[in-house]
Image (cartoon, rainbow, N blue to C red; front, side, top):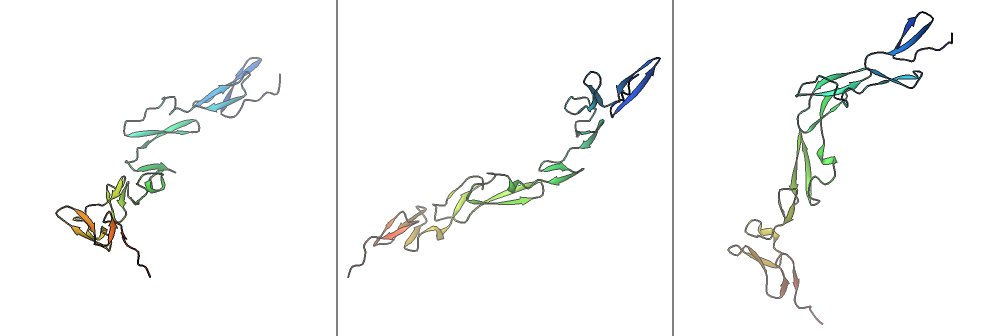
Length: 167
């Protein structure tokens, strides 16, 4: 008889004049003759009995059911930890600040901009924010419009001198 040994995660079944190797529960045979017993991922193969509020986590030779994390959290090393959404790309407008909060995040448009933080646009309504007008402009609140002063041209948000001073 050869000196063949059963691979890890298997048991030897002795028979008269021979033997065979059988993988233990949670492992599947690979190769002929049996070369190894590979872990079965019960989670991927849907061979688990986890409830709807749980998620399956594969272990060597089996699986375990763990409680699902709340939205905004992820399962890391056996516990639910806050996801820092601000580290993800493009969660807020490029002209906004991302503020991580427990289980969520907020986007706040930069000064002079308006919007939900995911989409920011310049404030052009000086009745909301008078300081958006150029220092050489004034706000007509009834029109919600910045108007450049005499001698200056522009959209009121930016005014440039109409005439250059000569010598």
